[in-house]
Amino acid sequence: MKKAMFRLLFVSCIIILSACSLHYRDTKDAIKTPTNVESLFQFQIGYSKDSVVKELGSPSETTKDYLLFKNPYVLVGLDKNNASYIITSAPKFKTVEGIHIGSSKDEVINTYRKKDLYQYTELGDDWIYYFTHGGVKVAFKLQENKVIQIATGVAPLSEIFNIDENVDIMDDKAFIKESIYLTYSKDVKTNNKKVMHEDFLQYASNGLVKNIPVPLGMDLSEVERKYGQANYVWEDQEMGVTELWYKAFNCSFLVSDNDNKVHGLKCPIDIEYDELKNVIGDFVVNDEKEILYQLDGRELLFIGNKGNRIDYFVVR
Image 1: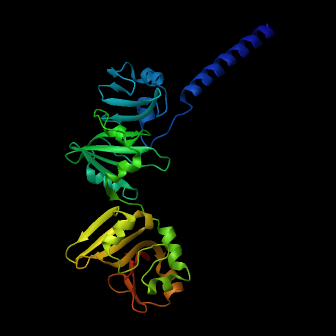
Image 2: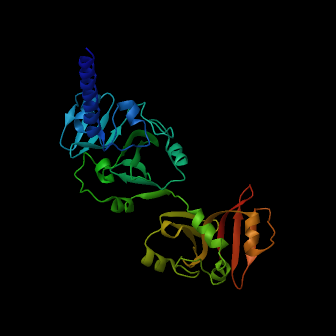
């Protein structure tokens, strides 16, 4: 009797382990996304085509490239019979930050302001998108400044955005060049180190910031010839200055509208006022929360906030 029970338990364990093993082999390439795709649809990017069909039922349309489901609209892109992205207008689908169908464009921008956020427009369609640190794309299709679809996955952006169009697939870098830069992430730690380094003031007195090959006085056409277009541009018509953010240098170039030359290097930092004393000694903070430090023929401007920290320095 004991032997029979042992055999039964042993066989049961083998069956359970086999089932787990099969399920694991089917989903071992699962890629997590910052959405509720798993809890809502019971699959993840990387799952097999069969797993997707098992969870969502029979698709309305099937090709080698995608599965289309309706009510709600769910399109699952395929790469070698595995889910590579999802586009959906399901009302309950959302990102971990809470962006959902019906969210406004401003909500999207404000929610992801600290990320590198891009906008792509093609044939009347507006998409706002960003990349996670793991390379997963998250995108929002807009109509009248409202989110009408959300997409996420690892397929090329052009494939996700142009599923119904005969468009040659570009790589993501080429695709980004066709997009508008909406927001940007700032590497304040790197710039903090530059400010606290002993050679900071020497560079600034020469109209330079270390590791930024653009000196004061350089013509904008020369900047663009060497380093391409800025990632983000602000225009202050009242002041007659255009600010051009270059992600590669983690710095903005302030260009005068009068002569199209660089008249300032503006870099984001996050330093306490007391820390700055180790660099320039005692100083006075004006009513605008600014500190002006005179150099030989140059000026250093530190721009603070309402708290006890400094947000930017400007060499001018």
